Length: 408
Length: 210
Image 1 (cartoon, rainbow over the protein chains, first blue to last red):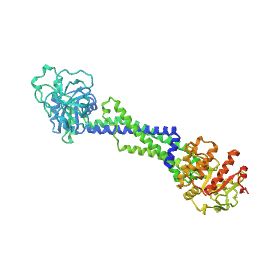
Image 2: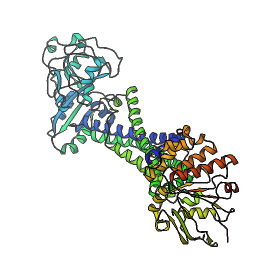
Image 3: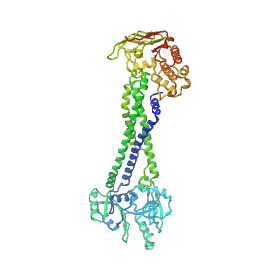
Image 4: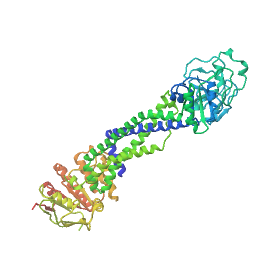
């Protein structure tokens, strides 16, 4: 028998009140855990996926939509832009690199992106097997895409129009897998990549494509050459120097029929909008935790009143004043430690359930069983709450008079 | 002499001074302290146990003057040299019978009496794992006696141990206390207003409010 065991016995002696306080605390902490995990992972992912992209140019519309569709591959594209016009602004000396994208097709819900080989180096993608596309209709798969589609090198498949599942399937030339990428943890894992030419040819009537061009290698850098009036969806731009950030957006937005949007700025704006919701949830969690703290305080204080005799008796049995203080504080700390453990478990579990059942692509990339150093802080908060809640009852315990209580 | 008091007196703030008769006891001896309600019996007991500090005089237990000890050292001395049987059993409801004895052992850290044989002698060995709430009053009283004996005390103090018991059980409890005092070699002081106890213990002092 020792103090820890004794405080544990006291806790389990009141299972209902202990259980309720435990749940309240765990609930509050689990909300904070989920917020922490989601925020951390989304933020990391968002900066990761936008690395190396200073500006996105696309059709006029919502700048946020343009960023979401071209950088994160979640929203619908804003429309297409004329390639002639796109090529014209790309010649600016402020631009270091331009990667054109052609979007708008999918394979079983996975987005097909028409681009050039620069897109692979932008994403620092490495091949698990195979090699980049060289001819029209050759594609490479992101690691996740390969897993979901269950396709191997050399397999063929057909894409469908639109970016969601179940749309009209293209009947033309099938795609052929020439490479599969190693996992990167970035958005590229869930993409199907090919040349812009492949997408152009897919959308044309079979007989209007000059058969000779299908057999020619596609371009691997810059814009694909074309004799016709062609369109692309957007451009990912890297500046040569910081002047680009000042001059280019204004030049494009006022001087062309296209718009320019900065991923950093648009995502900051999005987070500002979401921030209100996150703050409300955080506030709610803090209120729940405070209520749990209050509950623990009330439970300790009430049980202290019932336990005045016990405490006096323990003193008579040789317990020092500090040992009684330790007993009361320990009871609270035991409870909050359990609550913190349960809260973290519930938080991760909740996220795992969310990820397992979500159809939102943005959430499916979250990893529920990654632990953050900040979670130590959550345990710290919980312990602080437990310690504070036990202060007054502990002080009362300290002042227990043996003679007064026991000889009443 | 195991236990001795010398011209003890005590006063509560704003009240008359209470004075107490001198007593002296050796191991195995029993003493009955009689007195009416309000006569200062309980004060006497609290002085003997060091829970109160006398205004004048001394309590000498096993060669130590109680009023010389302070704080933690007094607590430890009391816990290891005294076994107190309170008027009510005051058992810890969250613990089992055995654990109630173990916690008394924990704070003193001595070997003392082995708990199973102690429970057996008091006839409650089959209740060792029972919750305190399931005990009858007599059983609870015995557990509190067992707890008072668990650290092999030098002085056993009993405060009205029989007041809530019937004649038969009162007799059993008094005999039990006397026997156990002899077994562990302790002096026994019973404070009571219960005249029934007189029949069992011949050595009597009376506390009177003067």
